[in-house]
Image 1 (cartoon, rainbow, N blue to C red):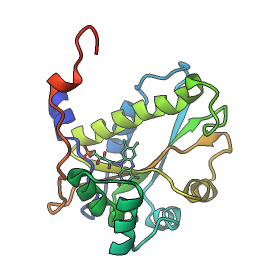
Image 2 (image 1 turned 45 degrees about the vertical axis):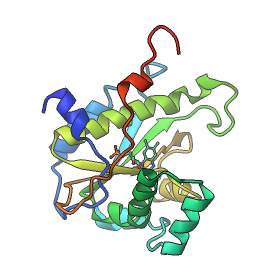
Image 3 (image 1 turned 60 degrees about the vertical axis):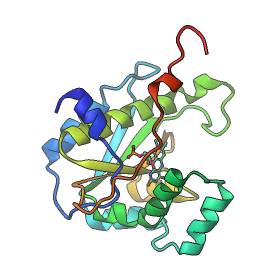
Image 4 (image 1 turned 120 degrees about the vertical axis):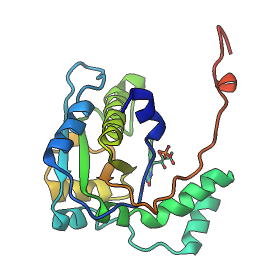
Length: 208
Ligand SMILES: Cc1cc2nc3c(=O)[nH]c(=O)nc-3n(C[C@H](O)[C@H](O)[C@H](O)COP(=O)(O)O)c2cc1C
């Protein structure tokens, strides 16, 4: 796929077909992730790839499996999510958070070496490692798209990150920024409308 076609077709997908993914495909996707820019020139990233369903189910066990309509409405209200596009994405996404990992062809856990307390940064540089791994994650998402796969991600909430460390046994000085699910998009997977921002409104030439 041509680069801009990949960029245009990458979408977050939370409904997957039950199919296998070749290790060679995963390796190409992670190789793309490893090519991202890194702040300290170290690319000190690791990727735990989980295909074993038993391990996947244990890993995502702390993610709520059923969410009532009432609690979805509560989230929309508490987080002040008033835009209809935004509301539709959350209404679709919240109930699928567990299932999307359970049904994916594989789950990938990216890890970065975090030398300072990510939640107590003194300055923006302390977030550089975190910013770099997100560059790497975008490469991964685009590469998955180019390979004909789709992906979604979840930011670990509550104790989900620490539980992942226990299940996967990654070292204390590595931080997991998100869970990633990769799989073949189900034909029924919705492509949810996103807010469009006309370029003339976001590009500021020479000054704001
Ligand atoms: C930093 C970040 C955090 C996200 N967290 C979640 C999440 O916890 N659960 C989820 O289902 N999707 C999550 N997403 C995916 C977004 O919902 C999705 O990217 C957004 O709706 C735009 O849709 P698109 O990716 O199809 O363009 C996250 C995306 C980003 C970049």
